[in-house]
Length: 198
Image (cartoon, rainbow, N blue to C red; front, side, top):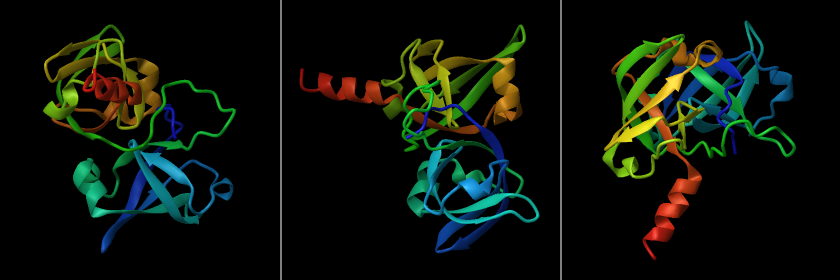
């Protein structure tokens, strides 16, 4: 379980196909405090740590199944790709964003960007099957970042990225055409399911 509050920007330093895809990710986290088997959200994808090291810099390894590669933007990762990282929520931690599972629902696309003051307005196109779960002023996790939806029009929706978010996450690197991991709000999922039986 996560909050969508990014706590580090990692970098893919190796990728190797070994049946499953294995990635080594450089991190600013103190790997001495990370356990084998721990969950770390990498661009919103909950992945399990299978190895750790600290030379030449701190890193952790994860294995990524073909199912996950196919359902997320992991297939576009390359050596040098920067990733939003978040360690799993602990009991007693501040819940600053919203409840995020790390189970990505699909991939949205950045279709427009323009500056509004110091912030950047970003418009996305969600997969049609997910559009009904996205509501104005609701929450959505995009590449692991908890964000508030400004407006919705069909499968398109907009958000604002403030300057802090651009520097504390990878959103400062975003470009039109980027594919973005999207996880819809858990509450929206349950409300929609309940309406099917109303």
